[in-house]
Amino acid sequence: MILSIGSLLGLGMHEGRTDPRPSWGLWALIAVMALFFVSMKEIVWAFLALWSTFAMAAPALAHRSKDRIVPAGASLLVVIPMLIFAFALLIGADPAPDGAWENLLATIAYYSVSFLTFLSICVGTSIRLNWALLTWSVVFLAFTLCATAIILQFTSDYYLGTTYLNNENQAAMVQLSWAYFGCIGIGFAVKRFGRGALSIYQPYWKKPTEGKA
Image (cartoon, rainbow, N blue to C red; front, side, top):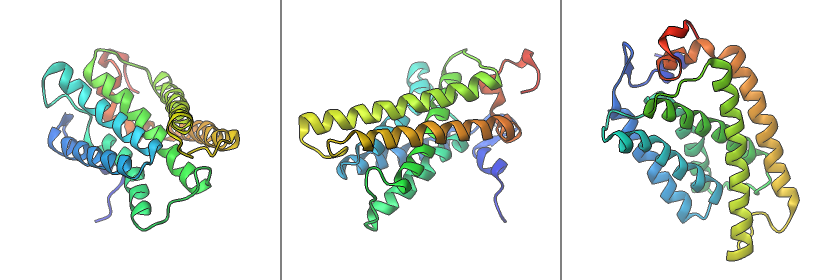
């Protein structure tokens, strides 16, 4: 049976309730990939994986409840680009830092991690966002994650002698351009076409009294 987008996003959810077990399984997978990326000295991907592990676990730690975690479907959006890149590393297909292949995958990861972060905030707090504010907040956080990753690369090059950016501003500008235009494009597509598919998460981000998403 071919899985639909809705069934993937609804992974671990049943009749509006979330089963935390698959979410924690994906959390463990992301944590393992974070260690893998650290061992491979892939600072951007290590940063995204570590950020995700913290974002996913934060509501559970704050409320001391293992049930306070984002649905597995949202975690899966983060896992997929990380798994693809990890597989590429394992088979020796590591692209250049300013290569289109990695930057496209990283852009998808920035957006997915950003969406996961906002969903985690809504799970762990009483903060609720309307659809437009949610979609564009995710885009702006994705920009911030990319900028932070570039700062980490620059700092590592300067103090640790690594060559992530090869002492060139061009690599950083290429990364920012991919994140800027890519995340805006994803944001427009999600805002226009993603409302129905993502409505399964509506109880997490929108107040019940506000009506349909």
